[in-house]
Amino acid sequence: MNRAAVAECFRRFENANPEPRGELEHRNAFELLIAVILSAQATDKGVNRATAPLFAIANSPEAILALGLDGLTTYIRSIGLYPTKAKNILATCQQLIEHFNSTVPETRAELETLPGVGRKTANVVLNIAFGQPTMGVDTHVFRVANRTGMAIGKTPLAVETRLMQVIPTEFMRHAHHWLILHGRYTCTARSPHCGTCPIADLCATRRKTP
Image (cartoon, rainbow, N blue to C red; front, side, top):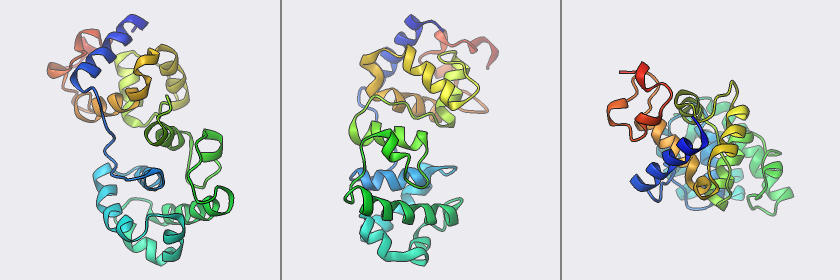
């Protein structure tokens, strides 16, 4: 897919959904950070079910630390990989208190020093919480980018790098959301809904799918 086609894809995404929003429920940058850590290999709906009661009683690094491992586990037990995630969240809260004055840092390098925070998580937080033009490549973004031909790559970093090169600047603020939503509801993994896809005529694999 050439740059002009990529730009047209995002024009259509914008026309259909001018202000896309992530589906992880949060009220501030800290809640978002915790929710994104929990979302690895879990659904947003599942994370929201767990974090609603958690954030009602603990939505700061100090409050979550006060819960301790057993207390935190009680809230997130329904989420996959919860033992590791619980330990990472507690360690992250400790580091936020000790090194960042209990606030979420606004650079990728600083975010990636936190336990459980990789490049994708950092990019999502920077984009949603701080409005930075970053691209978090999850399974949906990776699939859509490769399948449509927007950005061919064998690794998330390769796809991220290419997307950052080809997506016009004016679309970067919401590009991450548009791609995730497109992959979640239209360009699904097993049975993509090509008949209702707004960019089907631009897609590199349109003719190969039902």
